Image (cartoon, rainbow, N blue to C red; front, side):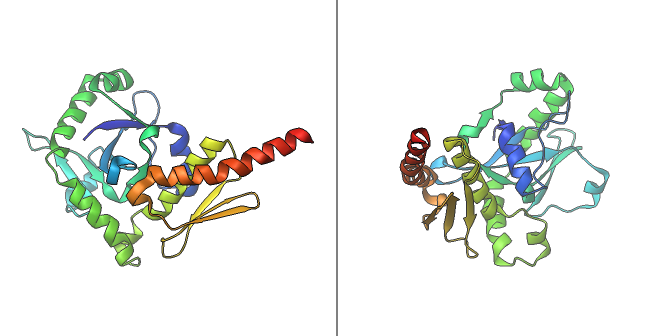
Length: 230
């Protein structure tokens, strides 16, 4: 696994859609890096989450598909936990991989960096990808379950991810991306133009974005030319 820094504008955009999206920068010396939990097919999309510091309530909680406690590799002391229910998608271009030297510069604390190194060591031994796939499936298998209720809406967040990318690409605030109730279709709305796509981003996110870019580029360019003529 790799600790990462996510483009701050993307984090803040997602928080306007889902208030449970966690922050990464909590002020001087209080930085919580994300880590890559899973890469979708072709590595076009990363799913990421965070590690939290140990809390008193963690001692009463049992590991589950969406919650894992992390223990020190030598002492066995609880040093953190990770919440997979707060995982969310991000494009690789909005991710910066962090070395431990980067974390030292950010955190200004050798103790905190050593803790993250121990956490990385333990996370590398966990089969988190299996938990990722299981949680992604269970979220929509039984939407009314307690597990589903405490878990972010991954498929809607995928639409939000595309919306951020397209707004960034075309420098337009009026682009909106939604999904059908069965999540099989993406609807992309900008001005009077509405595009419909059934292609799954899980198979080829890059190809999906290329198709959308091609569809949107011509009308947006024509609109710019019309505005210049006026």
